[in-house]
Image 1 (cartoon, rainbow, N blue to C red):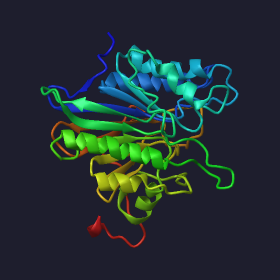
Image 2 (cartoon, rainbow, N blue to C red):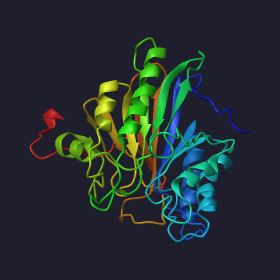
Image 3 (tube, rainbow, N blue to C red):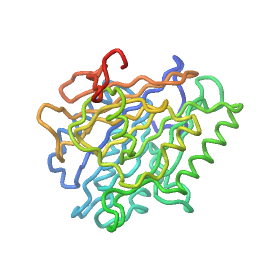
Image 4 (tube, rainbow, N blue to C red):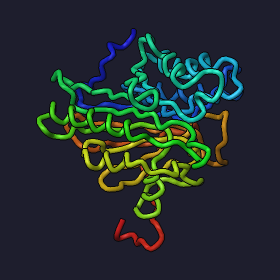
Length: 317
């Protein structure tokens, strides 16, 4: 049965999200069988209220049927009867189909909550989804989805950044939800593909949980999105992908910066670093969230290993 397009806390006050990231599927199905088996297993075991795909669902370069490929990925959620939301990564629209057209393939899908977003701001896939209270007909939390783009101009190099007009859009949405909530910022989360520069900063300066096996491939330009999140005071955590063998999270100025766990087998990984998914659980009426990993080997990681930057001691963690 299709969902009613409205997210809601359960009667026990919980709301669970499964984050899949960097699936890198292709329409020929090459190496994707274990990826789909993993996603199906995670959804069967976790039974979430929402599935979020944080970019690079497909490897579109050279794929003759990228629209088919991206819909095959999200069909895993549909088959499980679970609504889903998508943000695009840098590899989703490198081929025949442009970014605008790729995000529109979900239009009319009864399980998709994905939106292209406003026409007058940068990117495709900027939208916010409220989560209604278990009993009250008003939002008790919110989820922001932001298009982090693909590649920076050649004279700068590296990856794209969240633009000023997107940040202004977020501030307007946040302000409106805060006003509706009696002036109190609504407990919120934000999802995008490319990590912010602050992901590198938190690893180098604060206690984190998880591992960093590769460079943080954030933009060379810091456009100030994190500053806006701090100033608005609603977003409690951010969730990115992009760097397949990083899975850490750490709190920075009151916001928990989190990587997902790379899901796809059709891309690079690391020996001894199983594919998987990040699980996020909200509790109605509370600020904060619980998060854990569910891995392809069937294990659940509740407590990731602690990382302390140089010069820190355990008593300060």
